[in-house]
Image (cartoon, rainbow, N blue to C red; front, side, top):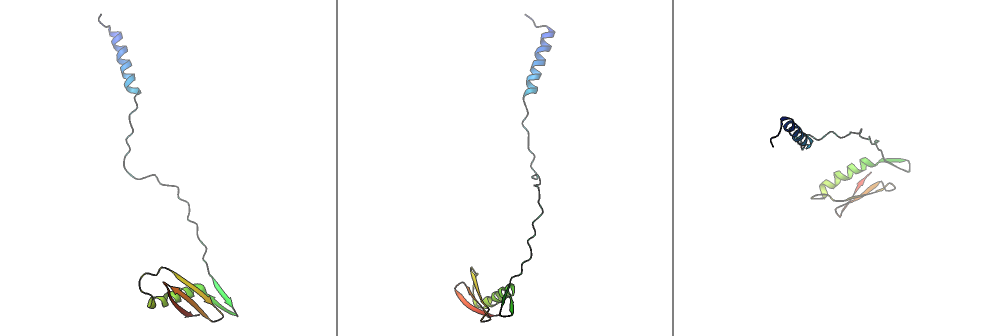
Length: 106
């Protein structure tokens, strides 16, 4: 039996619907990632540590700087550990850096 034109149009419409129903895979374009929500950086307060003893005051940051300056002349290579012991009654800060001991006058 030959098909009539009405049936041909109906079958073509059904074929087109079948084609339309299949989703096309999305292609992602290479590029930048979306920007993340940036929170304002928390500001850390400025710290000052002072040691007070017998009417005198010593700045811990200044003691650290003096110890590091003294270490440069005595310790060779990379410094792994620095231990500082402040003894205000003697007016001295003792240190140990990579098993090398020394002292700095306060």
